[in-house]
Length: 103
Image (cartoon, rainbow, N blue to C red; front, top):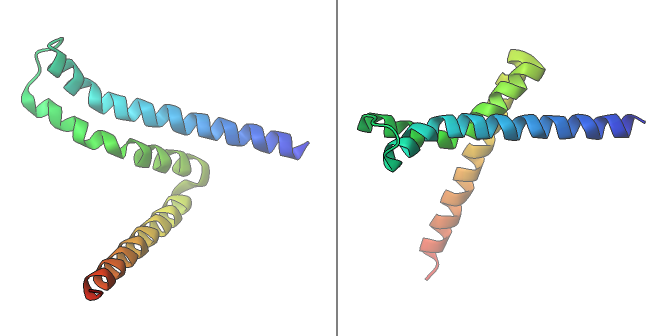
């Protein structure tokens, strides 16, 4: 029985993540979309909000982790994600350097 409730919980968390991601992203893209279609007469600076829309999944993840695991979970997640990004960047640098050295 615990497998069923875990699966339901996982689905619920995924649905919350997807809904929150779309909500945040579209909230930031909407002013730009309204301005570009002529529906709303907004200043050009409003279009810059759309640049931050790509952060929707990251913000949603932090919100949901914070809600479930608190500050400690957010700190651990930030440390883990930051470390993984740094390692990925280091691997790419090494790979690029190796490609340049090989004729």
